[in-house]
Image 1 (tube, rainbow, N blue to C red):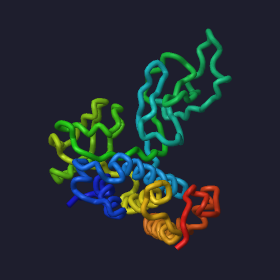
Image 2 (image 1 turned 180 degrees about the horizontal axis):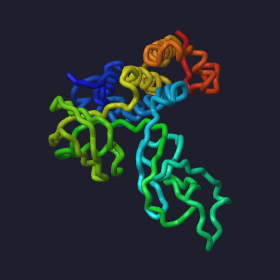
Image 3 (image 1 turned 180 degrees about the vertical axis):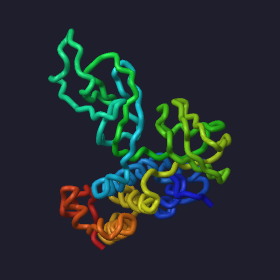
Image 4 (image 1 turned 90 degrees about the vertical axis):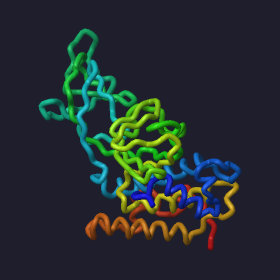
Length: 287
């Protein structure tokens, strides 16, 4: 039995919910089912991102973190879990300020190292040649989960992101070896470094970075998305499922955040810019 409700276990729950579960489907030795594992994992990642947005909207400090980043000729690469910037500070703990592109230093001038602008996934200082280590305070986004069979020792499946450091700090659970550990380093060749050894052909699942109390809601939301969007779904989403999901989210959030942070379903939708369930983009059938 797994310690965490990891991506492999969430996929298993979804397959049971849609009456398409078997060990062969889970291990992808049988691909004759209506839905591939890769397709269902995309639904899982969409679901956890949605739940993340609900929590972030009401209690952003849950995802607040800080890290030190070192400049390369004044370019500071943002971490892969970067979602939204709170404050950027220099080596003397002084706040740096964002500027527009039309406010950059004029050619031939020195510029100001107290100003920065964002370009893609980098923060760039207005002065060249800076290599100091700065501190970045930011709200984390929800990184995609993955599950599958190791293609070699400590090597994730080809469905995993082939981006160096992408999974750093996430927890991986070895389903076959019944052990888990934090990934301390990850390479573009999909090789993990951790305190466990993931054996060749072992099955694994990554653990969501959402607070653990909300993990059970991921499969529920993913099934809702599947019923609402898949043209081959044998069942359509009904209002009672929708209502149950938000009631469970509300009660989970109230227990997690405390009574002062209690919210209602109506408040959630108003904060998201819609007072109607149809604002979620989900089309439902009536009971």
